[in-house]
Image (cartoon, rainbow, N blue to C red; front, side, top):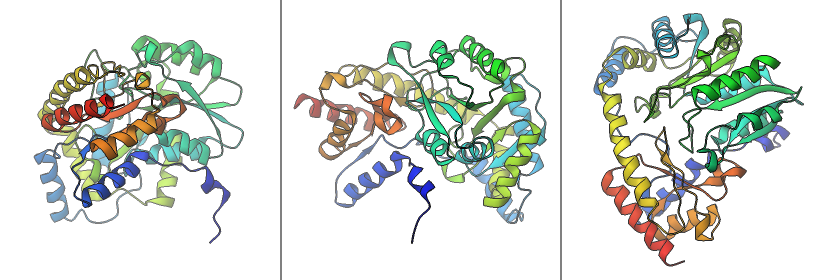
Length: 387
């Protein structure tokens, strides 16, 4: 069958490809330590599971409004209003199956061929993939280790042109763990407002912050009117398999994004949405406990990586990834990642999986047990010692 030309512009998320390779090795009897996939290794909180089960038994097995059920949209509006310090109406909320549809729909709705979109690099690979698929030009803003993987606002300003139609922000960031400060957010807002450029703020890791307070660009006066917040339940509540995310945006754009939902998914699963209501309105102790555990593992992994010759690793400020510079090993990111998988049985991702500016880095997810993390560090050290 002949494919459309646009399919040649579509990328992928390499984490799932590496996961498949790791699973194939496990099927051969190899022991693999999984540090490649970006999902919490905790169970979904019991109260959330029970809410989902109760919803199924209570008849939540049918279609819902395409934008989501009102109780969930209200709960999201309340949570976003409280955490960002802004006013949010449920009509601004669109519930979708996971976070990626918001990226997809916003780009389809807002950009065309010839337009430019500025996005973080290294960054979540679907940004660049979907920008290209939508026919726009992907313009990377490099995130550099010497800037603590923060944002160089002057460099961002230099990338803006008359064709810039969208700026993508991600803080806390995947894969770097970097954070955009409130001061930097204000500077980005000034650039965006001067040109009338909308901002897609990927805040999926907003609750996974180890120091300071979370800063959202929507907290800057005037920015809620030109910002789309992307958030969800996968990371915060260990609900990756439930497929539940959302966007918060101006009402008119929400109507257009809802049209795209109608034309693609119809709606998000009803029982999943009821579980989402419980996640937001129920006890939050499981979130606090998970963050505390991740903080402990973060120190373990970063300290361990910095003891390995050729590795230099900053302490991530958010998310659950370590992103060490491995240039001192003399190997490229992909070559070292392959060595770790096939020789050490440690599955990790080459920095180039997150864009060209990821060369010289490896991403390790520390969403694994302390025992496995210690074992992985030992194996990594053994491989590097043989170089």
